[in-house]
Length: 296
Image (cartoon, rainbow, N blue to C red):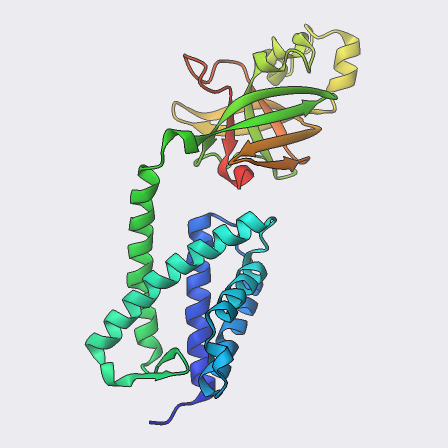
């Protein structure tokens, strides 16, 4: 049977890209396609070298794992070692699902077109098989992760945050809101929604107690000195939620926000605090809403 290296390269490149793309979707990471293509190309080249080489080193499990870490690092540029291993684990789980769907389809269609060498398996079927298996696998992954997501424990939905504003610190519990992608529209800066009473030690009460009038353009209740200091720092943030489709929040940029979760601290100095003039919960279980992209 004749194997064309360029065809194998393209097929592996496409399959690697699809798996990495699915991994990015699951992790809810901003996908940079050029990085995914480069990582996919490295994986495809390794597959070809390993298949045609007589050296056993290319089938070494440790080498394959190192390659996986390199591919994930190139594709997603994780900011910590912990995230690198976490992303790699999701990548492996996604690969197993894709591989299972592909092999099931191949064995049904043309099992004789599967070639093995040096611990690797090559499929000489057409690109049609790859795309069909990719669609099947993608559906399985999305459904599976939705089921898992619904079973996440309450502990995983909260984290502790420290807000540093005007050189003063406050700490509170925040709920990780998977549907919160709120950003300040001009600078595209992510927003953490915080109850206004939590900020009494960091900001003038004249502002915090008159949020609605300030949003309406009325500064008559604000002393001149406070108005002069804060008027250029305040942001107006539009938002939509259940029962309020065209809401507005007043916001202010924090000096720094420290997010604590799973014994890990993540600092971010590019966050706007959206000031909410009511309580987020009746019992005070949490006093801030954090978008999932900030927690990762």
